[in-house]
Image (cartoon, rainbow, N blue to C red):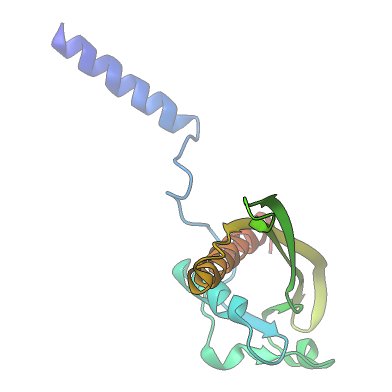
Length: 173
């Protein structure tokens, strides 16, 4: 009887695996390219670093020197694949108010336009990538609220980079 249960369990596991079931995030993306240039707006731009980390974790080479500031001719001089990112736009909306009639919870909406080039030629985009997050503001602890907002933005940028990776994976490059 115990052996029959083990055989049935084994068959069930094989059946679930054969149908393509996998836990979310347990498989790495299969990308058809091995190098990506990231073109970013000038100045401080944390999304480029996050995107570079996500790409490197999936076997894509993103040399430090290829994270460059955008200019009108930047995409034309890049070799291979290049992903041009627009400046981030951040919206902050009040979701709820606290007992003092002040904002208690905020929704953050982060948007970036991404354009894909190959050897300087436009092959996709621009496409707007959007992520949402929220944070609670504690008026008694402003520094804690600010760090909570920063952590929420960091998580949103990570989610946005992973969303870009999934969209790149879906393309047949």
